Picture (cartoon, rainbow, N blue to C red):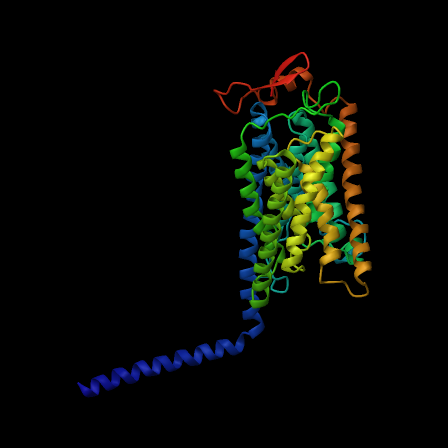
Amino acid sequence: MFVLATLVSGSAFAIDEAAVEAVAEATEAAPEYYEKAEIDYTINTLVMFLCAILVLFMQAGFAMVEVGLNAAKNACNILFKNLMDLSVGVLLFLLVGYGLMYPGGDYEGKWFGFGGSFVSRDADTPALDTGWSNSADFFFQAAFAATAATIVSGAVAGRMKFTAYLIYSAILTGLIYPISGMWKWGGGALAAEGFADFAGSVVVHAVGGFAGLAGAIVLGARIGRFSKDGKSQPMLPHSMPLAALGVMILWVGWYGFNPGSQLTYSGAANAEATTYIALTTTLSGAVGAVVAMILSWASFKKPDLSMALNGALAGLVGITANCDQVSQVSAIIIGAVSGALVFAAIIALDKLKIDDPVGAFPVHGVCGIWGGLATGIFGTSIPEGLDRVGYIMVQLKATVIICSWAFVTMFALFYILKSLNMLRVPAEEEIEGLDVVEHGMPAYSTASPSTATLAGGTVPV
């Protein structure tokens, strides 16, 4: 028995030794770089994919905010527009937008280029030098493009023809957003000057906000929003719970938007940077909500939930450009200013008789501008060759260029559609509601229309 046990034990030892030698030979054959690069590729790709899902889920948040803050008779129309923003946007971004936004190294420092349609798949052996999958990158960027388009939906709610909205959405996601996005994120002319916009306060949010402003101006106000003598007549939202749910969904989605824009997550330094971005994002959003609440409380003698919700979104927009390079104190200041700006801008639009039902321009346009400027004021990553003043001027110049591009092009498009009588529904259809008129179905089968008092009578809202 002893001899047998010894033989068995010796055989096992021989097998183990051979296995160890085989592993050692394999390790010597595979460079350490390949092992690390493959791990980095895997982590970066999977985390980016999860972040893209969070950004995509923001579409649900936008939909709930817009539905909640508008009339029940237009809920189906709003949901349909949000669905088409995503669906049409993905297709146009695949065919045109992605190639315009990321044309390749030959167009660095330039204003325009095109890298072709469709997404190049990674080779059978992953493109380790890239650091992540091309497919994950497209998914992430397409979700951003859909976000820029969806911002406009709330500003034009309740009176735009569905066909006109489809035309606008296709042009914004296929042309307008990608071209200006290339100027920064595609290595274009503004990037060459040192312009910083980490996750898109300007490139995404201000573009959507200024496009929404153009639409609201050309469309004109909803029937009943202002009296004949110009007095503001608020049109009450039909579901504040849906609006609040939408803002909370957006806040959660922002953790894909901002931390996800780190793009590389593998390794201690990247992991720390990603979570720090989440910290500054959270601080700014929270402070924005508190400041907007305080200002509404002081002005209206009662705290206004809609103002606080928009304040949270304002803080999130303001920090989006600089969440990677500001201190915690700076993040709090940025959020506080964002909350004050959104409150002031909502009041200003009301005074100017510009009807923006959800506050899309105050939140995304005004606070998008602030995010770009705040990067120059508080940012710690000052480009080489610039001092603080120079950094601020670069941020100001680039922000003005991008916002002007979005506003002028979209104003021209909306004006052309208006001239062709393709933009706004007739008054009787607006009063009846876009759900039934445009889509043949109400959002709520048992709902009874609410009313808003007008000079000379009432109309459903």
